[in-house]
Image 1 (spheres, rainbow, N blue to C red):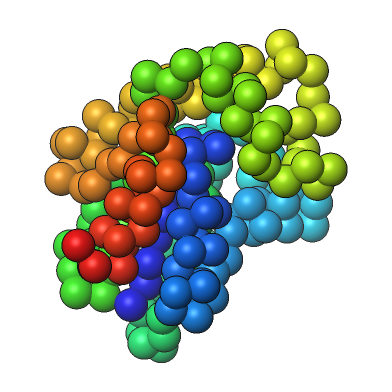
Image 2: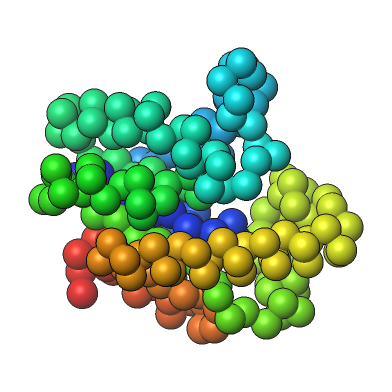
Length: 186
């Protein structure tokens, strides 16, 4: 089974991947790692970390689709998490392999920006968190961009019949519900 978790930056994707790793010992790969590999090691393809998530997803999709097909053919359990999967891109692969892929999308369409800022500062990766090295104005701008991105993801999920979990409020409950959904536990 291939487990895919996508959505807006700071919506809880990595938490779900870690939940699956802990509960089922299924390893995961962050698409952030892949994007940084392209950014720093394969610049001629035009994929880099300064693009908006939908731009990265569009450019990365042929590579990611081929990688997913190979993983599905190999019949291994694996989790891939990251922003660079869009409902409009993944839906054909889902139709081709309906019993071999579980996917959900996360976002925060109605988040209180001040609370999100406090949560980011309290719960993310501390000194290794690239975003927290930026100014508050930059972080608020990032949150605004991700609210817009979340709304687009949610709309596209409705169009393609895919699950969207909003983490705007009751973040822990939303993360648990999405984890259970991806693992087909509820």
